[in-house]
Length: 414
Image: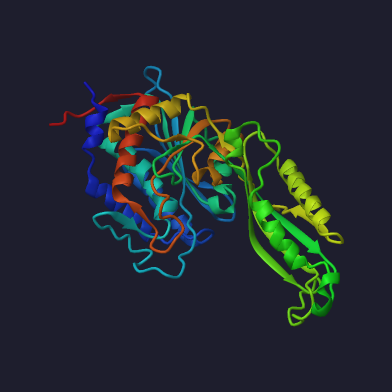
């Protein structure tokens, strides 16, 4: 009799850690030749496991690595797709270890992109490898999609969807610290201009100070949620953040003329809204805040507009029912491995992410969940992932595959 739990508890931990360390050693900055080299390596590895694997063209010489562990078709096994990106952000200042060294110590695995999100990629790859090496065969297909261009809005995942990649369910392996994320927001970028009235500082009482008005505006935007939230859960992932601000004299920003009251400010920021909400309503709500500001600062003029995305796609919001089979299968696997209930739902900060799950959900029409190792030490110097979280994620993915896809065969474990 097959005992998936016993198989999961007996994974080759050293080999799994080596796999992640090797992925880190590939310098796969977004939109560089390193992306393709890592994609080629993933294809070679999947083929060595007996999977059908190929480089899938995306754009401008960029390629996804796609693998299929073909199911036997026996029984009622479903298909399951794993999705993760290979491209990484660049390394910043402040590192104390080699960003591409793949260092493994007693607690962590270190490296640029290890949390976002090579640990997730390695976890799904090692989950399949561990099941293959245990002699199991899935009834339904297991599809591995290691994509490029997530940092350009998800062009790799969109290309995969448009080329026919589909499954009954998906797991996006973005870092959630092993929590099951069932909803995340969509994102947009906005710009605001404030125009006041200048005077010399000796007569500032007659002026309309654009910088002071901006200082009053920022907390109003920071506290804003959008009026079209269909539920408190959706409202919980509404957020507005001002990321840049500049103020000086005139639109030419004459910063040398500090004795005069600044009459012009330009600021930019990003907003997050959930399923059932729209960017147009979010912009209208920001406009309402500006109307209030104008009333408080007579003579102030303001405008707001959202950034056009040109050829880059926007990541849409995503949601899945907590009663979905993929969520309940993942919850059960987590409970088996960790002996406690899996945190599940619209969890922040991951709920403020944009991920390729949005494309799989909105464009691909698939049902899935976001769950991966990493998160706490993401996008920071000495980026790292807890080694125990990474290894447990492999085990949890293995049990989820067995649950969703069904498996047959298996070697006897002593």
